[in-house]
Image (cartoon, rainbow, N blue to C red; front, top):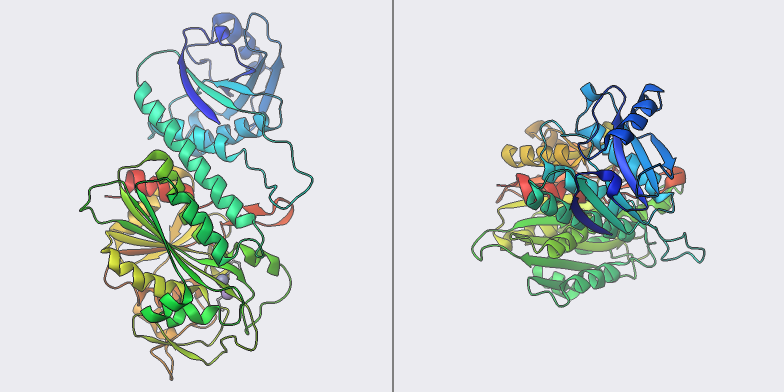
Length: 493
Ligand code: BES
Ligand code: MN
Ligand code: ZN
């Protein structure tokens, strides 16, 4: 998708397949570039009640008189007094939905109004992310493919010249984030027999090809063994797919600036292992690498932007299957940190691969470490499919991530850690158990991780409820790529 900016006094002169305007149900004012005759026609639309439903509804006008574009698409913005970031997002979703299902190849969009608390660059970025991500089609393993999206070019139409640099930067950022979301979605949706640990490693390698600022390193099982990663390696004992530890280093900032490290859970299929999961919906456990996919999506976006920051992505990639060689309940393994773990449930495998990756992260002397994982079903019970669960050992970092969630529309909600919960991990036969009982499952999972993150500022995002959709629209969402990008570019310090 191609985004540009055009400054025009009169929107009637813009030649596109479609002009897109936002319309409030109550407001008398249209963007400055809308000429009087068109404004009159649009007033009738509003007064006739066609814009009175909730934001996002669409009205098409074909072959409008005295307008150079073929069509006008009016997207409802709701009541102007309730106009805010989430109404703006509904406006954008309405645009994306209507345009995707139309023959429109080029659209010229006039932004409806300032969004309280947000600037123009933010508006442009949100727009570009939404329209880019909406072009997603999964066709890797289908013979009957959907027709490709027709929308190719989007022009932001402005009445005045000011502030173009910020808008341009916003569009650039949004486009890169949208592409990162597309990549994360594709990796998530690929089946487990295609998207194996080695496959993820190859996709990560591809990111570095021809890129000065990117280095990808892949550790095999032997190399992990010599580092003492007994927890990570225990997960794939039952699988014929060997585990991989993928590291993607992006160096765009000051040589001496400490990097942010992102650690993404990369279980390419989670059967539960010997603690086998029930059969229903087990296919969805191909999505258990969505944390890792979001890290790859973020790294790609940083490359596209050539961002001037340092970020390291680490993905412990592994497959959790039962077999005669599989790790059993009661087995004790030694992690890279030296701490021993009694594996009481082989289905609590995410924390086992993460804990060694988190210990490994120390070598980068990180400014902060954020892990991203489809870690617990309990997180879906607590927060549903709306917010990621957020826990950590540093409140300023947690606050920055919460703020990034609000700004990006890719929200997170904090849950507590604490000594009372830590006690649930007690084991009689090792330094800790890998499960903490049925109560507070998301918190005890994070408590487990916290024991490996004491040397740096750390936050954990449990994305079990947000990484994919179920049912008729089953598919990966690409979350939390927008949250992470917003954090890295705007709210980290
Ligand atoms: N990948 C799952 C968590 C999960 C389950 C995410 C369903 C999304 C939907 C994870 O590895 C897991 O199995 N966790 C267990 C932990 C339990 C054994 C302590 C869970 O949540 O049931
Ligand atoms: Mn599991
Ligand atoms: Zn899992």
